[in-house]
Image 1 (cartoon, each protein chain N blue to C red):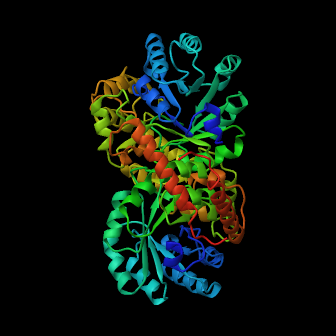
Image 2 (image 1 turned 60 degrees about the vertical axis):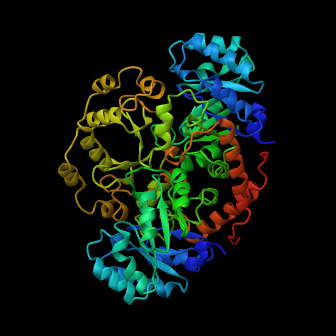
Image 3 (image 1 turned 45 degrees about the vertical axis):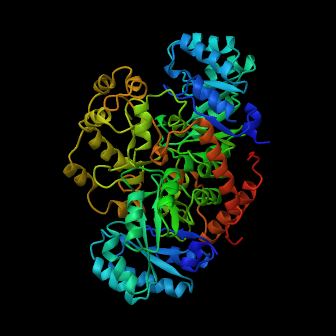
Length: 316
Length: 316
């Protein structure tokens, strides 16, 4: 059996990314019911809201699901307590030191996975005792590593250093890309952008429409002096870029960024002044569909591509 | 038969990139003799030097080889005349408008391939009548597209638009990556960085050693306000970066860049003040080897990975 399917007790080795303003109980339960690991994204939820989403997710599916928690979350202790109290069995941690919380989860028999953007942090996560690693390339949406290592370069290098299961992320929105990531050495994939353009994602309709009409070159890794983040280019991004081009201070950049920019864009639908976190592969996503259809398409394409690989005529 | 092998009449669907200060007759003929398409890199050669390399390459191999010409070359007419006079049958063009020279080559039955960094330019090249396209991702060394599209994202999008053969480039230094690129929809691959760390590459020994000891995050896409180029970070790069960070003008950046920076670094071995063009996958290249051994390793790994793909346990 596939290592990722086995680890999470799921049908397909596909993780639906736990994204802020996107991955509520509707998306997570739909992904779980479609044979993937569904993840609730805690980053944009107050503790009480998170509890509600976990409870609703349990009602909506009897399949495994998990929660993604970035370690820069303000009410971390409270969030972790809710996760344990509600009996969540899988936690993805997407920033910070893997030593901080891994023993806490392992004591409670919770499966813990760290999201990293470099070989160095993948090794740290493995050494801290996590059960698996998500290695995320430069093309991924949202917060991103400073090394700018792409999925194509990152996965084989991480594979060489890891004994534990490896999940590839960044630029994966199709069955071909899933197969490619596995050929590079991943045991499974985490898919974000493709699921943002799903009926079940909780982001604003404006944002979904913006994704499916975006073109190549429309996303960019910005705010590199603060925390690098991949976004769709818009008015807000231009202000940031102009400031960076004239050598603005960190403080000035922080002021431009302000607060709740991602909420304004992704959740409230302000396509000009909001921060629109999404991956580079948005330019290849052309339709908003139910999660079930997205997963079926990916799996069908995966198997077609797998069959095709067998026919490659390259001499030994 | 594989489309790329057929187009160039070679054993493996692998192109050795025609890189400045790197790809002379020794590298191109070694690649050709190892079953790949060898390319001489005209970018760093005066016309007479190019003629000499073509003549020596013909003596060193009876296999097909070609020449890579960037259309920003100063003595373009003279170079094209030499290529025709010397009976070169394959030309890769790595910048500029595909309409300019394609009819000239096609009239002379020369196979012409354009190197592009975006879907938009891939379509332009196809429309201009080229025989194949190299689509090169953000992770590739040297000059690079402004869209920053990675190989993982670029190849499936280009594939969807092309009827002609597609060669993937950027981040490919192993048989696993070659297989992944083909799973994404490429018919073959162009490999650069891995061949820079070959015995036959004409770059300075200091540069080869620097490549095989480089770490993740050591390359960066810089000079984005002039022409984006991926280099190894060094003193020269830091000067450029400092200037960009304080909002330097294009003129100032041009002055810092100066002339013959790539020659100083790659050919003369000045690791501090030279411009060191190389791909992100340098961090995975750990040995300087003969071209023959590199090719054999890549092919062996390709077939092992191909076999492995057949064993993936993912339900339909």
